[in-house]
Image (cartoon, rainbow, N blue to C red; front, side, top):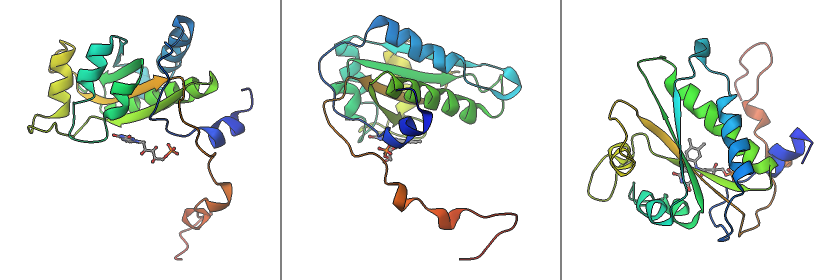
Length: 178
Ligand SMILES: Cc1cc2nc3c(=O)[nH]c(=O)nc-3n(C[C@H](O)[C@H](O)[C@H](O)COP(=O)(O)O)c2cc1C
């Protein structure tokens, strides 16, 4: 795909994947997009953990009580963590990098889904962040913001509906009460 507007209209969250592995060059291109993302004061404090072991993916899909299942169905996940002591807008920095990687994945014809980890809990009440840190033997000082489940789409989703965009939430020069 080479038209950015088409890309963002067509990008949808994909939660079902084929068993086909993601090509290594594509993984590199996706991670490069994360590493190219802008950060506050150029702090680049994120850490990306690439996961492609099926058993580990399955375990990560239990990091929270619901809505993490796509990880267990994906051939690839990228865990996005960041050092909050290095930058105060750490959530923003991590989120922008994750979004860049999702858009890059879409541009490569891959599907992805953001799985929220921060402030979420596993079935037994364990914080999802702690669960993921333990599975990946990560330091406790690195909060996990999200996990991107990535793979070849096994579902088709309609493009975004341009006619339903919330233009009523857009204001020019001053707040307009609607
Ligand atoms: C911050 C954030 C957290 C999300 N968390 C989850 C999640 O935990 N599990 C999931 O299946 N989808 C998750 N999503 C995907 C959203 O549900 C999805 O983006 C939204 O429904 C809009 O659909 P679309 O991406 O297809 O346009 C998350 C998206 C964002 C931006």
